[in-house]
Image 1: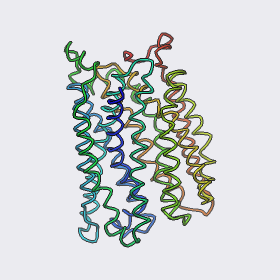
Image 2: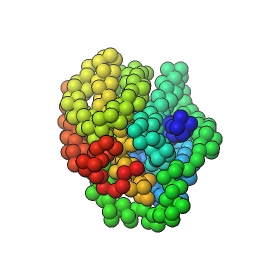
Image 3: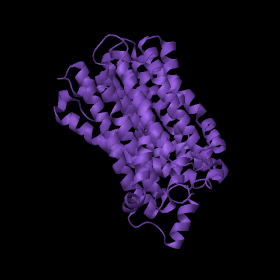
Length: 428
């Protein structure tokens, strides 16, 4: 289990490094380089628009790779998704700017971002099922939480490189070539991840399905027919997690540097410190889920998010590093209370033959609802006025309450409680 969990963690860390480095670049530099004819605010919105495309393509990736995972095995998904995302990310670092290519430059950026999202949409389902289907029943949430640490590691790697570059280079050097370095580094990381995953075995759950000839011929069709309500509920339930995380990690960076005049180095440091603590606490939240239940932890995280959004925005607006850090930390602790759990929770909600498709589609649809739109909506809501952007806090609170309602409608899947109410589908 240690080797399997490590391989899953490393893979998701690499894929999310690719995904997050784009978000940081969108907040800091892509607007003026690829949309120079726009005003600064409009350029940021346009850059966040290309950022959002990666979320839109993630459900499509979960459908494509989910079909592979349910039909041919979880293991091929791990290779195909990592290869696609790594190649697309390296290519982003090679795209000439608007000054060289004109309108073709942002179009290329858009296409490559779409491919990034396509690969990441497949990664989550493969990595999570690899650990969840190998894990012992009573510790499934703990072991399945390791892929959920990957996003924190990827974020720290991506922003650590960006922080070093912005601190060590002049602004002109960073805008000229420095921002491209993390994208080029993605190629080396992808190669290392592929090598690590080469020795992994297929999951026992899928091997039993294959031996009995019970794989789904059309997983998406089965999910739509038999589990459409479950997919919509899980997408709505997880939307708040995406909204909170990308408010902190993407929109807040742009707001702090452009509106509050805080240096990008300070903003990145505050966010990174909060993300590091969040990543370290992920297994502990998962252990609570193995003891008290998946749904219980998710409801608690949603409620905490709803209560914390106004304090978070107020603390951000102070522009004081310590207070901004505390605002970010409170938000991410609420976030991880939910997202440390979902790697075990979502697979348990679906029967094994359609699990790779169903769990991944619900998870990535939530990314569209909560992650794709949030930086754009938050930027628009914070555009006017000199006071704190309370509209952003109100928007996030509403998202949290909607997600709370969706979680309330989902069943508990903790093994001790499955006799009380069976989920849709068959438990792991």
